Length: 350
Image 1 (cartoon, rainbow, N blue to C red):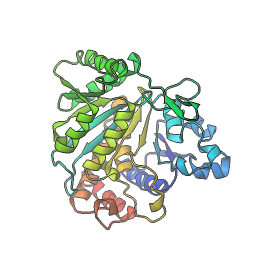
Image 2: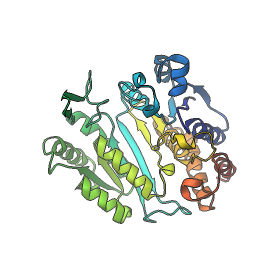
Image 3: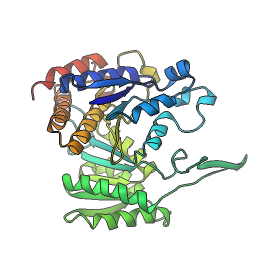
């Protein structure tokens, strides 16, 4: 199996290397890693934050692990257009962003029963790098006026609804459609209605819908009530960050970006440049994301070995946290390498 490895910026090199070590152990080294440049290091060497040869190489791989990028710190000429992560998602049509959030034993979460997944439509909405075939969806007709175009289509709503329904059917059978159709009846109303139409194809699902502001409040008050939430791009981005913090820290917030044929592991958190090089970052989010990638590949190939490896990574991280091993974001003293060694030491127990 050939997997791309993109370190990125800030804490990226540290958490990506920690993730590689865990995946290597889980698969007994049976991975051909393909390191590829992205971010400031790529700018310094190749003059681009995301060189074209990186994108070309990704197309020939089974999947890839993407470290965080810090495009806000790039020189002005390198901040034009889509940031590196968005460019990768758009190039490969990774329309689904799957973001789980759960309470771990040993970690202080707002709700001990929290175990949910936010399914975020990843290709349109109000994000200016994803809502136009050419040009930008954000523009300023005058110095005093700025406009943004939001795009919702039936096709994109249908395919993300199917992703969410399949996931909910395999879990606890509850789906919540999150929208804002009360103030955006045409766009958000279309998204909501299409999700309901698709859900009718999945007998046994319990389906409700909520306005996004109500869902945010409900997450804070009773996150354990949710199973799978499906929503559009902007709402999904915000709610999943909220859910990550409610579970204990964004350092635990994993995610998978995928289409029907390709997938990328990418933690929810950013590059945290203030922590870069200090061996203090929490690698768990990217390690959990890598487990999601292995499970995705295993499911599509009917490869039980990949699914078992993903399960072992999940259990090893959960056991490490339950044992009180925690990085600074969780109130602990473990370094990035210490946490990773604890996870690796537990991998072979299953």
